[in-house]
Length: 439
Image (cartoon, rainbow, N blue to C red; front, top):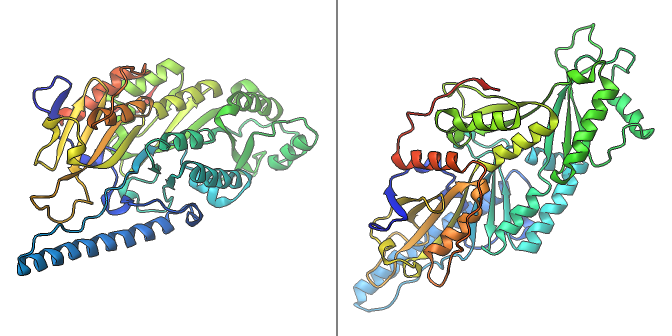
């Protein structure tokens, strides 16, 4: 690795990158699709706990085997856990009602359940959604983890993201006085009469818990939800709804809110807040977010503006979100001899591909390695979502018998990504500055 132009040795702080938790996400074999029955990950956590026990027992067996060989002066290989061929793709999402939608079992939820089953069956992948009531100190509550063959994990991601809902909120203020105070019943009448005819758009009304006696509606917000391919219908539906409900439709207030773990703040803010400024100016929206000193492990971000620009800004936030690919490998499978090292924690930034590559000891290596056994590495490649194709190309660059493509994607925020990864490489995050809002 040293002396090559494409790699600069650096040191990273692992928790700040989307790297898997070895204690939870070890997956030597795939979870059968019929076992994935509850979105809160309880089944998966139980399965992984059993796997950890199996690993502990396996390591104890290796110690016992070695002791037996030492006592009997025999020469024989020790048992080893097989290195899994699956890879782990981790993504951060900001549509973090996905778990809520599925567990609620409404029309949208049932559709997502069927989709989840079909994707896992077709791609032989395991899709793990974050538990919405998990220990948020770990800041993993808006993750999607896809485990499976390297050839199909991206297909599973693509199919899942095709229906990951777009959600736009509209404040119910300035309602026409002649409308029913229960605006939900009024909308139901319009739908029956085909006055409001958008069958692919779902509406969710949020109760106004602080309603005054003179207020004309019992709801404070309406949330429009649609699949990404229904983006145009969503824009039309919000305009039609505003025309039907508001006295002055031009004063309609639209927004989208999402939650981001505090430790991932820099991926969305960027050095000196340049990234969030760029998103705000490019799409003509206002983005509200808390200061870095705000307490809590998660922060709320809200985009205000017209519906079309809000959707585009939301896509931009997804484009810059962190993503990682993790896999386990025998050392002799590495392409470059310079990567074969006794050091168990090595990190470097590949500026040609805009990725950070991290080497760690594989949990499948065992507690000790004999001289006749090869080292095993767990490699994590991290970048932004819009640069996700480079995860697979960087993997090819590392492995024998693979040749990476010379094509490089055109990134919407390539300069900002370089700055963010360079900041990690330097290990200096002091220059990140925070402001409140940007127009």
